Image (cartoon, rainbow, N blue to C red; front, top):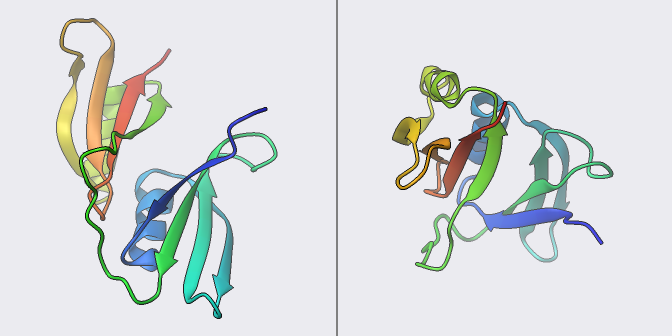
Length: 127
């Protein structure tokens, strides 16, 4: 077994694809409309679905926003330098909600950013 994807519902698919591709540097792997179900799925990631887990962005055509609830945590991305990653995110129009620095009660350098729908994304510094 292996992890295939994580699905999140988004209110504006074009805005979300722009964020994940232009701000985070992912690629749009595929996008499929389901007219009879009135939704579109778009898959974004850093590699092919055959090799790595990706994110499925689901846009229900009649819904513009969602209540994120208190059960959702975050998606984590490994980065070589969290400080530089935060600078790039800000330069590309993204929102940093916790600047890079050592995690509380530890030494791992982390940061948090937010996608256009408010989903948290943790950047974890990995050499």
